[in-house]
Length: 561
Image (cartoon, rainbow, N blue to C red; front, side):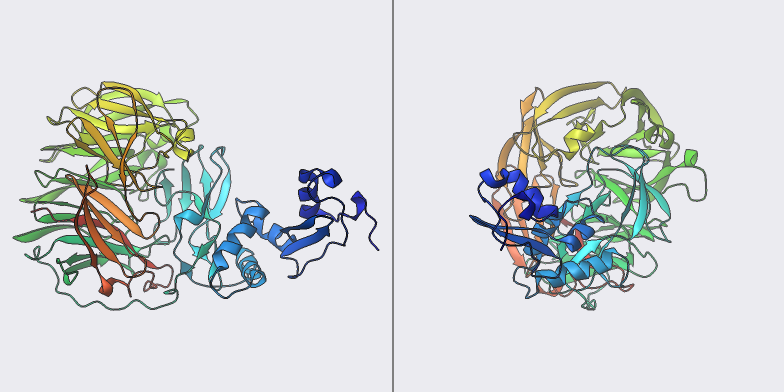
């Protein structure tokens, strides 16, 4: 017989839940049975007069200690993860606990953005974390693997792997300090990469309509073993050309009139209708790529680091490319937070490593012009801004005459706010002096996150694709305003890539049978596709050669006529 008083309500999370409901005066009433665990400690449950409370058991609580998530969140995500996979909740949690405790070896699986649990934004300098590719046994995985330290509330220094060494990772970087609490491996998990036969591109094939890049989905990036590739497709989805090099993190691709530029770990390649130029490269992480569609010029920059020097010598190397000239390498002293290519001119906003990693509330920003004919970067202006006030897009867009750069900026709180309640600032930079003007932008319930290489000016409006909900948003350039939703991509999140070239949105959905589609940026009208790419399916989510991670589509672009 169970005595019907508060002492009979067990302990732990069941007791917490009963207390939160108002004890015996709440919806459950008095307990009528002892607390039990039907799955060996994964959950705890207890019957009450008016229902049963099920809560995380001691094993789930123990697993949550390894993660930036509550036991309730872990349990809810685990139930979601195993849905339809034929696995028990007990098996999933116990296997994940083994992995989180470091007692098993396994392979990584692709992360899903909707299952990601971000580290709390209000971190302090000096806080440590332990993170890397999602690893585990079976289909329910937890992410862990390498060490990092917060240097402020949004940026980290991480020991990514033996090849990359220690690097500063900006908080808005795709490889930033997000821990994936739970992900589901796709049916391709553990499958070996399928060889793809295609002619190496010495020039852009005449029938090509688009190019996509494929590379490692997440760290560790094994530059000497794994690969980053570019694949050209025709209007029927056939593979008509290929380029390949060493694996590089965050690979991107941009295009211009029948040509494109992209980078691997060992080369920067510009491919046009009449030929190809290449520059030897020794990098492991792309920070961003900006381009001018009309001229075909581009600027690609890398998280180079110190390369054996001191922190004060931390730098970002860059390469300027052109359809009709040899690629031109250069370097800026510090961290290039954003950049733009406006006609014949290239620009970068730079802060020093020491300033960025300091506890100063205000730090110096510098606007450099990067000479397209060689020479040292030219300082055009400098100013003080709050340390955590950053551009939401790595690439700025230009005014029609190239005299101004436009970008959206936000505080750390605004960047982490998924409700859009805090809003952003539209910042205009004078390319001659660095003079700035800014106006408030209400986000109308959308997050601050933007898709890489989607920020675009068309007429007197600024357009971009939201990185969370796939909405195409716009604002006027000449007044404070609220973001206006123009239309929405039919598919978004992990497994999808979208970029904007001119006013064309190139989109690839690599779930199920991968497909390529083009839309008009302004109206959302479908211009081409969807075009199935069945040859791509064996590649996506397949194991890399090193076995450390899996392959994913990392970029896509149309080839404007």
